[in-house]
Amino acid sequence: MRKCLGYTLTYANKMNLAAMTPRSELASTKYCLANPGTEYLVYQPKAGEAFSVELPLGKYDYEWFSPAKGEGAGSGIVQAVGGARQFKAPFEGDAVLYLKNQ
Image 1 (cartoon, helix red, strand yellow):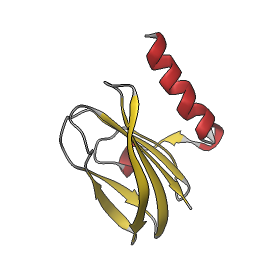
Image 2: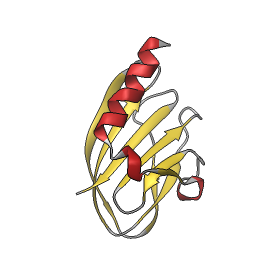
Image 3: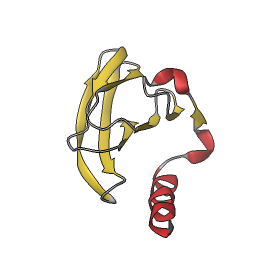
Image 4: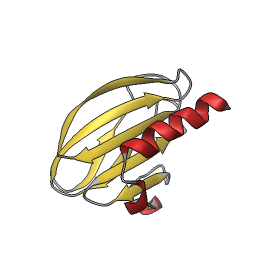
């Protein structure tokens, strides 16, 4: 439990949490905190399944996190053309995806 609280704190410090609101309509998983156009934190509880996030046009830094392992699992840059953008975690198990507009 303590480890999970630490993971939560890490993302709370990374994001502008005060600007984030629950926005279930922006992710097919229905688990999304977002400041639309700026930052997104999406949870995918279904292991191995792809999901979509509604993103405005732009370049986004992304970061995967594996809650089961308690570690990051890849990062990079993704281009969004506006609309639903598909994602799939590069590992098995539930996943967290953090996106931030450049």
